Length: 306
Length: 292
Image (cartoon, rainbow over all chains, first blue to last red; front, side, top):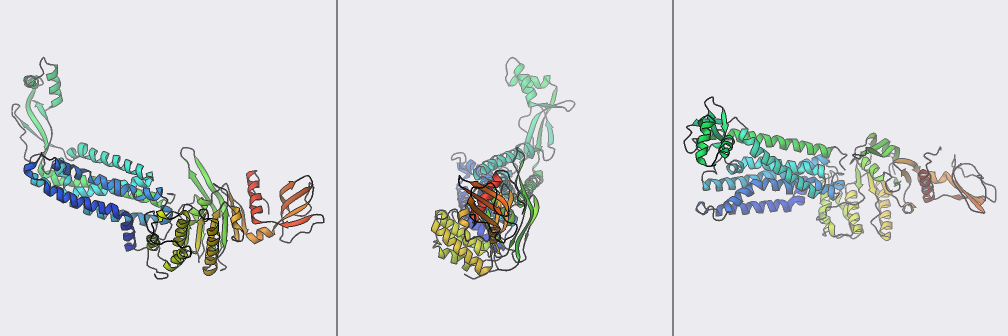
């Protein structure tokens, strides 16, 4: 209760404000993380496939960054605009840009902590399951790695904040953020990730069963090649077989011969590229995050932002 | 009152883009000065550009053209928006802490004093206060940040008549105590009597009238007399009204000296409300400027 304290508008003041405004969503995230850690411990390798708990937990880790985007990022500016409180908060000594950057940075720090915990718990659970298909290059193995979880969360937060600077209404901002986050994550994971580097191709005799690729490699395309080394895709062979009289597997061998196949091939990304792939995907998401953060700051700083 | 200038507004204009309908000038060619320590009333009908002007002076909105210069002793500006926004889930105490956190200079006692005067419960969430109480919290935060220029957008609109009078009185007290300059907007002209000592009259984004209220009132006079088509005295006629037997002319005088008129004509002083209404009527009927 002092008169004329000349002490406000410092970093601890903004920490207090951020905590006071977002404490329930922060507490909810920490509680969820604790529950997640406990649930991960409950997954027993032997009971895999019985409860579905393992899949649920792995799936949750995939969407957790989306929750950060929707519940931390999207309301950050949108709720201020919606309740007109930006007219109060942005008219004080702390500039709107500093206000926004401080809050976003503090929430980003919180997101890093939560994402790290989630990634550690998820990765540990995955390694205990130790079955083929959960390797480090599998979708879950790749995405649950803690540094990946961190960049996804940062991207989610940046996307949410940028959308909220444009949309200015909480619920639409949350919706747009959810759709945008899902679209980018799926696009990168499904269409971009397999092609960060040209795949390694290995060929093997036509009749051989199974794929002769090193353990833990990420398997991509497979099919046949002809004598000149041209690719004969699986769909070409299947189309040929379906034109035949009886579409069964005996036709497949005949079609392979007819199309001039001499060998089978399989494309894959070897496991020693894992770190490179992680770095490439982290780079993509960090660049996107930085761009979105800058965009949000410019929108807030443009002043016409009322 | 100090002799300085609190704020100088120079040829200010603000254009809003209204996609896809082109753009609209909400404010155009606005120039005025406010002496430090005055209570200035920004009067205009709804949509005249009052909020835009206040937002630009506050710095929340960038002008499209022109500039706002704050006086040397008026570097701190505080703005209370029309809807008196507060964080609904914050207690009143927390709201004051927000004010303290976001300002380099903060006077907690001054803010608390205001709240005590109006008996605002400090521990209640702002969302559960009445509209009038919320307005008081917003005023307390604005005063706590020790402004030298305080902008209040429709400050009295949420208050009951008794609270209006008390808020006005306390604000005038703050002005007298601290040399604070106040710019308050209103579309209720009757609220201004005895409050404003400076007038800014805004219509359709342009200033129709501005200046010291006493000077403005001294330079206008009303002639009342028998039915006549011509004015009995000097001055530019702003409004002429005729009944079957009586004519009334409201005129603007070239000098402040009260003119004499021959009986049976009499002169009457003009109130601020009269003047504002006449000028707004003229603006509506298309008379843009009046030569002084």
